Image 1 (cartoon, rainbow, N blue to C red):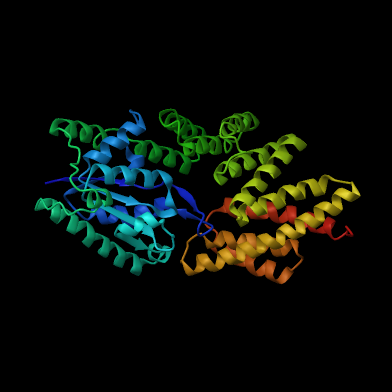
Image 2 (cartoon, helix red, strand yellow):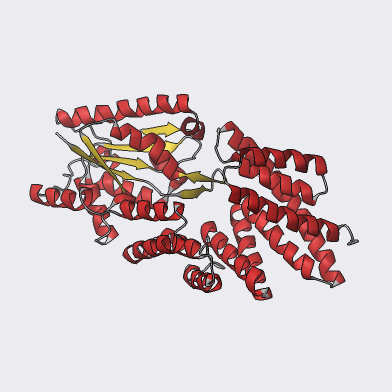
Length: 418
């Protein structure tokens, strides 16, 4: 017998505010959850972003939460949608729900009543530890399948455990068949996202943006698709580059970047405004970039937003001849640079411990921070580390552009007396 599984969790990178860092939830899904479920030849799994794109998402979600034989709920980063959907599942079905969470997450008191499969980022990034976790999760899923095979309804819902005498809702067999045919066999959001990812890899940014536009029209409450549409449009180069940047600016503004609590929105808007400044030399665009990146830095307190604020302030520095403004800019750049360096060094230590494959970008940030402090030895050491690990030529080109910018800034900063 084939069992249908529905996986609920966040998608993409989400900020874990208890840990003050971004967590790649897609990586957890593709490296831990999906391989575990794929090892069963009688489980057909679907994640929330793989729902058919032809219907209203809320309807799809309710149908799948009720009809799924098994639900995997990963509540890492305490994603509110995942927790809400888990609550609905617990109210609809007394059994066959499995909860996962990052071990470092501090869970709300209500979860003390639930059995939770915990894992660490080190488990995800280390092959040996990952295999061990997959085996343990496989056993947990296997027990659930055995219970279903033997019609044992082992309660895992706090609602049905503590509220006695309540019957779970049922759904007619023909309706279940209809739901499964619609969602497990049709074009999905996942297939459209895969198409957009492939187009992006081929540098077909306009076509990829158009695919995300289609996704956003079907999922108007999901800001991710709007963010990606704007980001990809901003990467379209050629004679109409400025035009595409203006279109991207208009799209991302619908998410209210100056009032947004989403650092992805503030970062994308800041990047668009910075690119517009490089074309127009408009101080309005530059000030918008500084304001947006600064908001992201305040919200997330991460080195990425901080170094972008610094680079934008450098543009102001190089354009200014006002002594008071120059003194202010030197003070702000130097202090922010020290803070960014501290954050980057801390992040380097974390990522090294977690065997992250993205650590080389930290080396670039650290190198450029030391450059601005006129610490030539550490600047060169970390530059060499970055260049030895960088994968693409465009990454080295981006480093060189920022390196040249900061060398010019350092020359001018040394002439300013505070």
